[in-house]
Length: 100
Image (cartoon, rainbow, N blue to C red):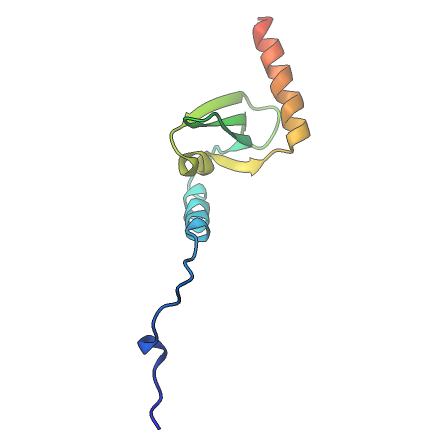
């Protein structure tokens, strides 16, 4: 009776998404960056915008960074801000910028 090695078996037909590999790569690249954004990624149809505080606290400046791809946006986003807090702060930033 012969036994087959696991390498002689054909690959499964189920394709794995690349999201787990790209998430791992993004995490590795983020370790080298010092100023990640605490905010959210917004999709406006043709590109993505990372919007939030540059850093991990509200004492840092508010930024809006356009990105060509979702992967580029993920590289800049360090922590995701809660949606309610983001909406409140984004409205407050827009209001204060309009009144300057």
